[in-house]
Image (tube, rainbow, N blue to C red):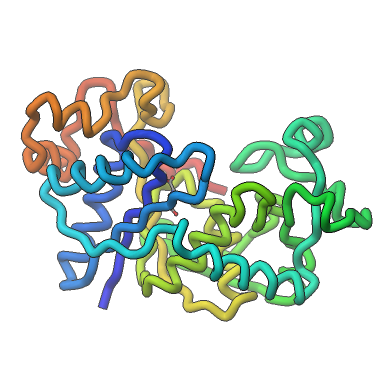
Length: 281
Ligand code: GLU
């Protein structure tokens, strides 16, 4: 049975793009008699706000969606720690003490997520207590895992290319687990069979597929959907004035009508769907 999910981070209000993502995941599950899961990704400690998660639930209910909520990420830290320890014991994580500025200065290439970490600390014996983060040694992990594939419902079969984003951080001193580790473990724990999320996370899936192989996790299919963009091609963002769902809800707009409009791809003036398949490597 299909299980899809919507996994928002409570560090800013939901907007139309989130509504579209939730509707796509919800409708996909409902169509096949499956389950639509809500997971609050609240481990970005400094910025996460619990009150926002309540707003998210109110937004989804207002849109007319029904869901099964699973444990938030903050309740799962022990499982992330266990997985990080396992990868460390496999010799696949190394301590890194580089700051963001160090990385920006040393990076020679830019990947889908910005400057690619050049591996500065990989061959240096950084003391674990000096580490600000633990990174995945992607080359070593790929050697261990061998060639991998994954399937996107729109883009088709992909050859995993986890090197695109460099040696990603899997564990942080302050956060603690990174998005990559937490989301991969959670999708497995929640029994997600179709990971539905925006095309901006397409490159992350290469890393997630590698982690699944290393940790012996089940492999779902992915559905990376196009994003809502403004006339200049940039993602909708609250900071550029996109009204939040909560603003619309409080203004008395009818949620189910908005959901229907999004399903029919009727968007407000100046907003359209990106055609991500043209842009992915
Ligand atoms: N929590 C992420 C976000 O809000 C989504 C992660 C995912 O769907 O895999 O952007």
